[in-house]
Amino acid sequence: MIKFFRKIRQQLLTENKFSKYLLYAIGEIVLVVIGILIALQINNWNENRKQKAKVNNYLKSMVIDLNSDTKAYERIIDSYELQVENNTLIFKDKNYQELPLDSIVSKITSYYAMHQIVDQTYQKIKNSGLSDNLGSKELNDAINNYYFNGINSFNTFLQYDKERSTRDDDLWFLTNNYEINLAHHATKTMDLPFSESEEARKKALITTIESNLGRNFLRHNIDRKKIGIIIAKQVKTEAEALIQLINGELNKYK
Image (cartoon, rainbow, N blue to C red; front, side, top):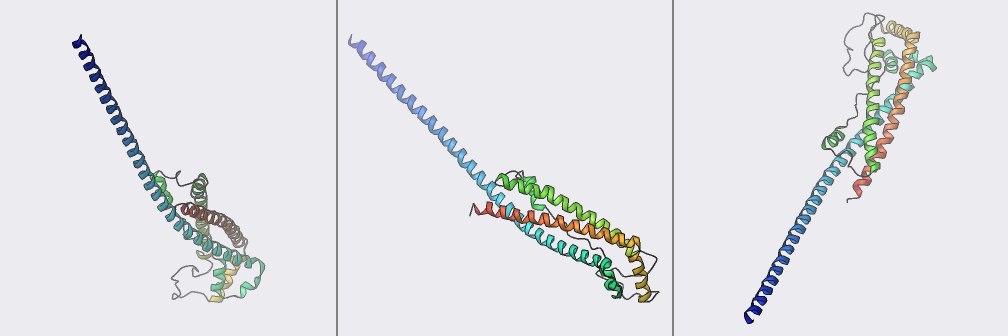
């Protein structure tokens, strides 16, 4: 009988020891799982922090691009407004005919914008897969709208205006009616002699200007440049608003 109770006691001790080991093992597993979850959380936090730092660098670079854009818009608007004023003068005041030949040429010449609005930073953002993760939905939408719609529309207009302005030059400068220097070339051929006097060449130019063809070319340039002014002012406003949105996003993390 004593042996029986001893056997029962030993079994209970063994089972109690096993339970302790089981609890210990479960505890170890729980700790390992918690450690893995913490490590994953830390890794995700680090990745998010790196991604946010990359996004902020892109946004700062974009602000630089946008500031450059707004200055370009201002130059283009000023140039277009001056051309509208000069071309309009031909219709409103015949006194332009008393100006020197070169001054008349400068008033009819169609100048086109050499600057194309760039989107290098935006393209880098798209290639990195972050174009929809730049901040608030408002900011994402504003950025994508500016670069996808505004910039494309404006650059398309600039290309159209360049082609039309070049065609205008062909009327004024590639003609058999008179010899003339290009007004907007950095190096003029001023040292080359003309076959006719300046007065004769000026008279022939005025005849072309006052022709239906010449006046129609001027009208078209005026209308084209007015459209350019409207588009440039619109995208300039969008660029300035976008700068404010981006700066607001960047200020959140100062």
